[in-house]
View 1: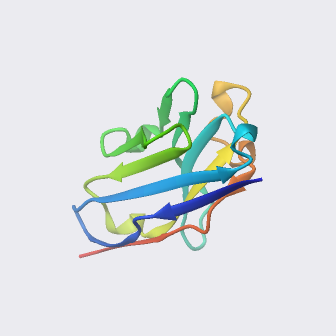
View 2: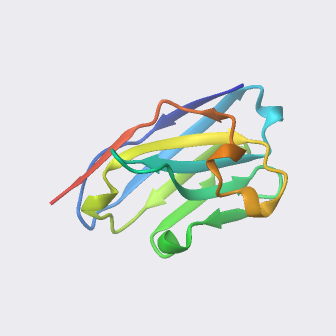
Length: 126
């Protein structure tokens, strides 16, 4: 298991921005990728973005490419998610996850990740 600690959630206005951060600890060698998902009440967990730890290669969900950016933090075990032009319907709990993803087409699957954090709440209001 990998320990994941997220920070940066909270309240944002419609059209505003928030930046989430995540730091991994523990058995970080067991994961080759880190990702962000979100879950809203009554909805399935939704993939947002992922990063390959060694290469820095990123994948961002098609519907968020023009607004969300995933980036490496201070080292390969830290990632950030910059979210711009937020919408009210994006109110959700946001999770940082870590996993060993064998194929690139599996990066967006929740089942590819074996560890996740507590999940900061993001509330977008007008």
